[in-house]
Image 1 (cartoon, helix red, strand yellow):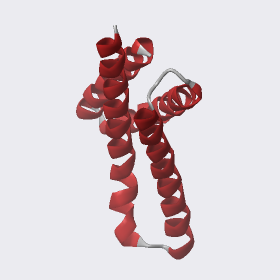
Image 2 (cartoon, rainbow, N blue to C red):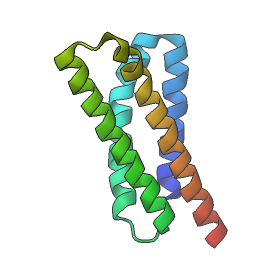
Image 3 (cartoon, rainbow, N blue to C red):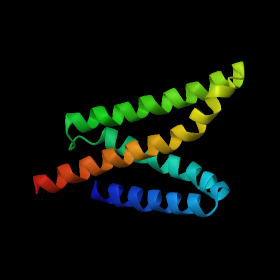
Image 4 (cartoon, rainbow, N blue to C red):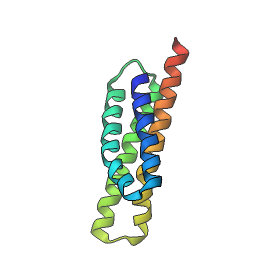
Length: 113
């Protein structure tokens, strides 16, 4: 699990730096970063060595992804212009939340040793 934390941390820092340099390429990097996080979360969800609290946090991560996708679908069908800012900012918040989850799992594994 330490490996997942470091991979996500390096990817997230790269995403933030690239977003500051050029926002367009930062958004493009967000797509593979999101796939990396979803794959990492699936690995965490199937791992039985992490605590039940961490499993619940990963479940909340999945719910937030489903909420974001549902918000995108509703916005596209009903042309909700006020939700465009939420749709653009929410993936970064979800990424930060996942970084917090991986950090907590990392600390949990370090305390067990």
